[in-house]
Structure formats: structure tokens, C-alpha cells
Image: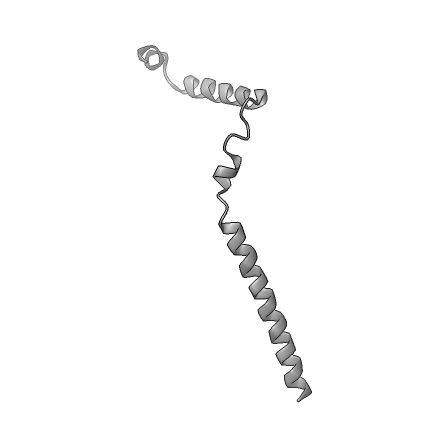
Length: 70
């Protein structure tokens, strides 16, 4: 019978661990990562500089005639 008790104890521990993981997963899924970071770079000079570099790189990909037409 001691083997059964050991298996039952181990099964109970596994079930408890699974329940804890499911609880953590449910909490983690309820948060929207995009909403968490939206606005986090507001008024950040380095981010504004990165955006300016991106605009310049995109402009460089267009022929000059397309830029002048806009």
C-alpha cells in the first residue's frame, strides 16, 4: 500500500502544480501587452529621434519625383 500512497501523493503534487500554472497563465493572458506599453515612450527624445531616422529612411526609398508629388 505504501507504493499507492506515494503515487497518490505525487499525483496530488502534480495536480497542485498544474492548478498553479493554470492560475498564472490566466492572469498573464488577461493583460494586453500593447496597452501596457502604449505611451511609454511619450516625450522621450531618443524615441523621437528614432522616429525621425525611420522617416528619413523611408523617404530615401522613394524616388525624388514621388516625394515631390506628395
